[in-house]
Image 1 (cartoon, rainbow over the protein chains, first blue to last red):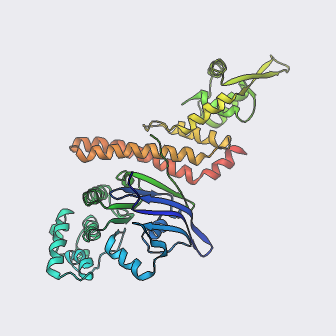
Image 2 (cartoon, rainbow over the protein chains, first blue to last red):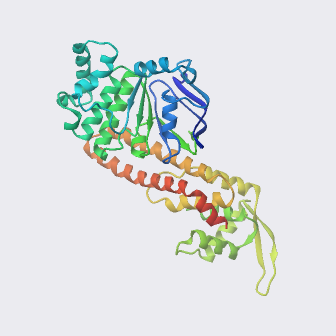
Image 3 (spheres, each protein chain N blue to C red):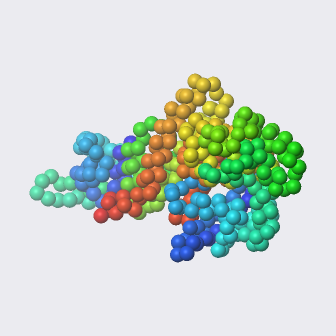
Length: 225
Length: 174
């Protein structure tokens, strides 16, 4: 069994008087898709934010590739998020003023890549996510399913080692949702990226390799042969 | 649904005679379909023969004497195994799941464990169907989708029950 690429141990996180996570544990290995499930308000998104280094836990550790993410200062943590992690959310992640291809090229442009090179690479990913035809359109001119596949292309274009997807199909109908999940998980498997998938939809979770349940800030994993 | 396991679970609350067991069963799980006395006594006889219950005295009253039964240690283990083993994910299994949850609550076991174990079994079945869809033609995909939607309905019931478990505990243990 390979070592986890990313692991949270005994993570505690409170927001004011509310304890969102209370000793939560979970890990993901390279190439693995793990679904994080649980009722609304159970701490699923807080778990994702702690694992991604977006917020720091009050106690416990988050280890990424041998480094303690939870003890890292803001600047290197931010760089790590930009270079090693990819993010897909439910809504509002594309810049409305940019075309779809410019949106996908954006992370590479921010990393200093030339426009022509960045857009060539973006084009490859748009084609792979079966949305090459919307490259020149703005996000407001494409359907929800197309927009979400553009967002997946943008999350994958930098070659992240971990993809964080928070209800990535929450705004889509069944058919479009499944299309996005199939392309996201296939692309992640091909590149060897790990995926942390927060969802409350069982049919979306069925694209994962295993599930972690979050309830009242605690995690639970069931194993049987 | 396993009447034997349900009666064993009810006996964990203390020794009872057959009539008492039938009444408790009908109250919690009958849903308009009460147990026949014949079913109760045939089941008790089988449980007795298998060492899962034992006679625990005779209640004497105005009518005929009534034997009381108590669950044995083997019987408790049998209930543990039943609750810890997920049902094969298939259509219309809610009544068995509901019974397991109620028995777990009545016997002060962790009912969330029962729900989590079942969720895991359901998701595993859904993963297999999802994998079949990836490689299948449209007919395969539609057949798998039908099964997936039914399993999803069960899972939604599991989630709802998990969310209302404290309320259900108060109701069945009051």
